Length: 193
Ligand code: AMP
Image: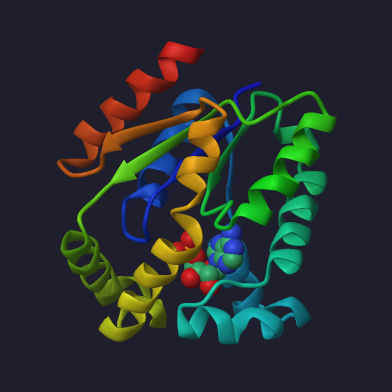
């Protein structure tokens, strides 16, 4: 089983690459951001609970986020045979710790963490460009985009050391064409497959 975490700042191309990688390696793609947006659109109780966090560019609390992840996994056990591609999870150290416990208990630990390196100004440019068509309010407002980047550096980036310590962390150049970046990711995955 191949459990891969795509890591990197907002706008680093995780979502774009995930769609291509899940096809190539027959992985089950989980984007916690997509799940939250789906719930918000459906005006569910969970959607109402998390909408304020997404609007402000802040992280949804860990307990809520892990519950969402565990539910998604439990509801899709039949589709997870080859492994999971995580996109946007984990984003804090407690999220990584609880995820490790969950998968270690099942004998299917995280295989590798692929980190896309993209400069700040490139990230801001990409997200504002995406905002023209994504319909995401958090992609349209530069101050929210910069807040997401600040939150990433403060709360998510420390996870690099967490995974470095486990010998699972691989950094890649996240700039260039979509195909170039895809090629770099595949080369790393093929090393462990
Ligand atoms: P994304 O689509 O990955 O950029 O996520 C959009 C928003 O969803 C983030 O800015 C957070 O508000 C929320 N979110 C997504 N994944 C997580 C997570 N793992 N932990 C906390 N909040 C999250």
